[in-house]
Image 1 (cartoon, rainbow, N blue to C red):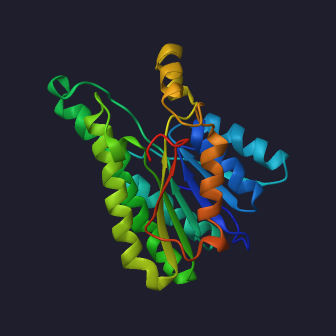
Image 2 (image 1 turned 90 degrees about the vertical axis):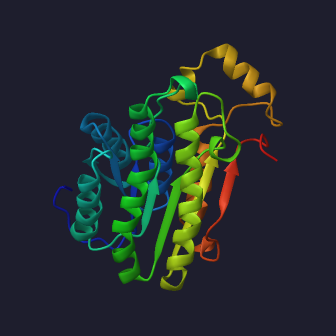
Amino acid sequence: MTPPAEATDSRVAIVTGASRGIGRSIATRLASDGHHVVLVARSAGPLEELAAEIKAAGGAACAVPCDLSDGDAVTAMVEGVASDHGRLDVLVNNAGITRDGLMLRMSDEDFDEVLNVNLRSIFIACRAAARPMMRGRFGRMINISSVTGLIGNPGQANYAAAKAGIIGMTKTIAKEFASKGVTANVVAPGFIETEMTEALGSAVLEEAAKRIPLKRLGQGDDIAHAVSYLASEGAGYVTGQVLTVDGGMVC
């Protein structure tokens, strides 16, 4: 559940997976845009540190730990944010996990765990967010997919399935809620420099950069800029779209 909070006139944005990597960049950017950012991840410590940094920079943020593999906890978190702050305007579903392995060696448990966290939790969060957004006649649902969901990747059948599922689900959400002032869009990052990609090793990343027309890996801020636009007033006529941010890798 969220900590007690007073209703705010600032737009309220939930960012999942906010403690590091792309999520951290997104949260920091939305705070600088004037949103009150609700930072969500499993562990409280890193979230509290980021909230303190945002406040020190003049922004508004609070930390709300949540186990995104627990559907009931996700629903309670989203509903709690809307209740405590009196509104919910932006939902950025960024959190995700990997359990990589070639399909013939991939266990049912590894497949199900990735689908649960990377796809099912997003469905649950969007469903819970829809009602407060409709009440406010304004909503921005922004779901972070991946180029893997567009083109596949050996060893990631579970991850690719979840990320492709995000795209189809978001397009459906966009159609269902467009008349209510709620948009739904996808950002599909390519190779972005994060702790997750660092685990691939420098040789793999150097080879990946060679295949990217812009000849570099992306940064968290590249994704944050895209999310900032889709969360803005100026993106009010954009819904059901996939914004691929990959340096031209998928053309």
